[in-house]
Image 1 (tube, rainbow, N blue to C red):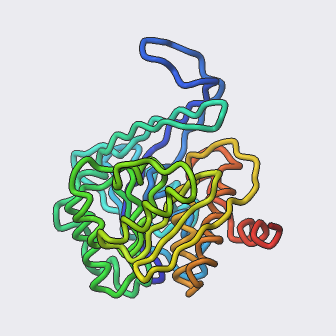
Image 2: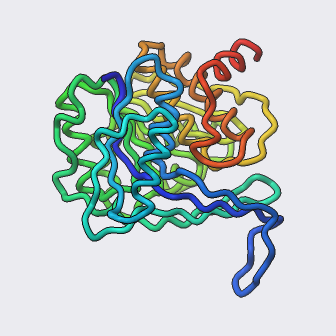
Image 3: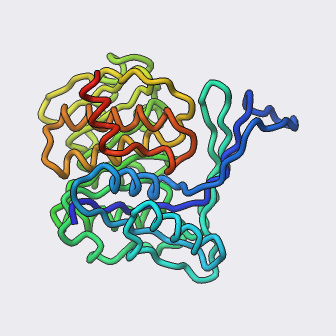
Length: 305
């Protein structure tokens, strides 16, 4: 296996609105989508579409009608479902998403089966032969840390998407990660201040390298990204120019693209450019997993810009 993704899988209910509803206000939606989501599932779809090698997805579904629907959706997108675990007496995960007219979003996650893992996490066999392992924070912290350690023991490069940011326990997670990929908000949660430009993002990336990761990548959305390494290398990747309509799956597509690129042996800057193209293209389509671009689309955008 070239890539293993351990994470969440949800049923996404996405509502399009002109502007985010204020407390106590009832408003009409301008659109509605139901589909596959969860950061783990989105990243598994992205890695599957973008990687040249095989991808394994390790996740939990509920013993309910949604569970088998989610399994079928994953299979329909080409994702290997052999490592999906059904959690007895648990409902499947769900996410309630609002997307406004400016393409910004808010997401409320109901963890369900995703949060039912034991502290030991998945079996070590899930990471056998794995070159790159992807993790997020929609699974229990102790199970995630245990899984990261098993991935490292198997020789995998460990990528952590620190989202959604946790109020406690982040140092233990950072200590196990080779690479972290926070956006501006997550960087603020980790470092105490929100970067608004490249120089600030670079400062944050350098400071976070001192807390464990070999590489820190701070994503600035439409402004591109800054990165720093423990060895002292740092830099910026300019954004790709696209017409964004929905940012829901952008970060997940970035991470799936990064894993695919690193599993193929791309150098860091080439891998970041590949991942950035994948994230940019995801904003041009509505939905979560449905918005993940193909390898051909990413290659075309890179060669075109």
